[in-house]
Length: 252
Image 1 (tube, rainbow, N blue to C red):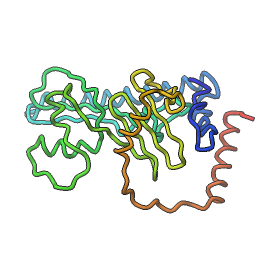
Image 2: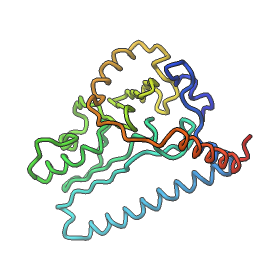
Image 3: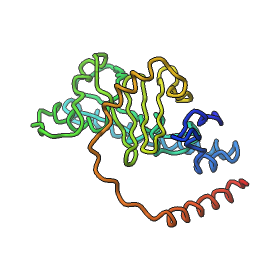
């Protein structure tokens, strides 16, 4: 975990836009605490895998084995210290990228697809695969073609929105993040999968062209932002959370 990971993630005034989260501070207050937190996460994942196995074993033995589409996915990724974060709820790749596995009747071998798609694509995909009528206006696009040929060209970026005006766009190896407060980031996921180097400030020669292309996928017709608590109410709650976290972590 790079303690200086936010040196090149700057706000519009040139100041670091982020600091270690409270969850991260809590989980890393000692090496033993971090190991226990990570072990608990891995145990939960292992138990979930075992439960999925029970379901699939039952399907294999059932008369529906050859006419059932199986889709397994996660609704988000998870930080285990990356970007000085723990848990989820960010626009970085560690949280926005999630596993997705699809098995169609007749599939006998595993094939990997390296294109990034969206969970919104699941509905139109299943509609197409099941031969159901498609609605004219629907979010997402069918990825049924990728199940036939996962290596074909797929010219569609995928977008994740994290609150009003904050968007993450992934296309092939590139990841662009645009935030309402002016904090923007660009990462080369192939060369830098943990997103340590913000290429916007590294003056990467391809950065301007890539950003121009990915910006076209950012939604332009967002609904109005939801009302928020008053600043005083929010600050009071945050102050109490920080105080309690410092007490737990014995931080000064």
